Image: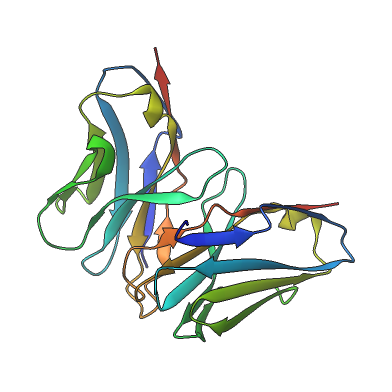
Length: 112
Length: 114
């Protein structure tokens, strides 16, 4: 069983749909992260949760809404997305912030 | 503010040749530095990290990196490239804030020719 699991692996949705991305970590870590990886751009940090509390919101549009119900699970709720939101969304976790981060394999999101 | 620059978006080497991927950083405080590798259709995997201990850091798969404060560099090397090393490599610096967020470079795609 991999350390950080993301589902679904691929998602195609229209601009008016609502969907959620899920991340689960089996490493006993206390910090979790969402990143956006677009072609030809550096990875962009979106959100950081530490002990289930959001500690970083990196100027992300409100059409992205994170949720961290416990230290093992992290969600990213999506609604009324734009075509430029098509990207690979990566989840990561670490023992604490400042510790090395372990990444999931990502969700490839395509907005029609 | 911290930043990372990776010199060369594409590097091509022959199998068995030396691999050198360049990374320069900017940081107002002593940095934590990382190298990650990403294989196709996968997430990022930690290769090695520098956290102010030894300046020469050894990682997985035969990779190592040397922290040079005077040059603000953290270049990644491997003496002999394998075909399986073909991937994208990211250098990152840890932000000095409490969140410890990672600031990534643009990435370098390593091609290994037979």
